[in-house]
Image (cartoon, rainbow, N blue to C red; front, side, top):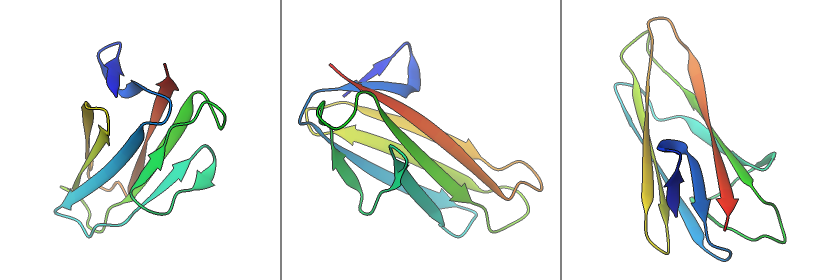
Length: 106
């Protein structure tokens, strides 16, 4: 997996590569969901397949339990090497946030 355009949300991977998702939370109860190509994603990984989609769109939706100071760190790792990390900081009064990844298949 590779980062494109110096943007950790714009990625490319190889056909057949497994992408693993790790989400850590601090100063908030960990509560998040993953959605892949418009469908709920159960589990912490998926396999890129040109026959399924190109690009893949991964949405990570996070809920904050407090009024301020929450932090989520989302890490994607490719089975062929490479990773991307993105931090989501909670603004005062913010209840939730989401990040969307675009993953092209080379």
